Length: 72
Image 1 (cartoon, rainbow, N blue to C red):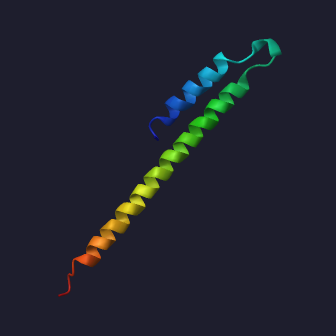
Image 2 (cartoon, rainbow, N blue to C red):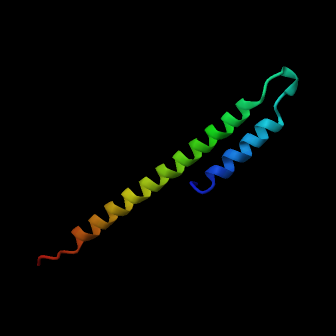
C-alpha cells in the first residue's frame, strides 16, 4: 500500500483533472489537491497496516517465549 500511494495519488489527480469542467474558469488546482489527499490517505493506510503487522508479530513472539519455558 505504501509503495502504491504515489501512483494512486498521481493517477487520481490526473483523472480528476481530465474530468474537470474547464468552462467554469478555474485553474483545476483542486484536482491536484484531491489526488494528493487520496495519496496521503493511501500512505496512511499502508503505515497503519504495517504498524498492526509489527504489533501482531511482537505479540506472537512474546507468546512463543512464554510458551517455551527457559527456566525449567
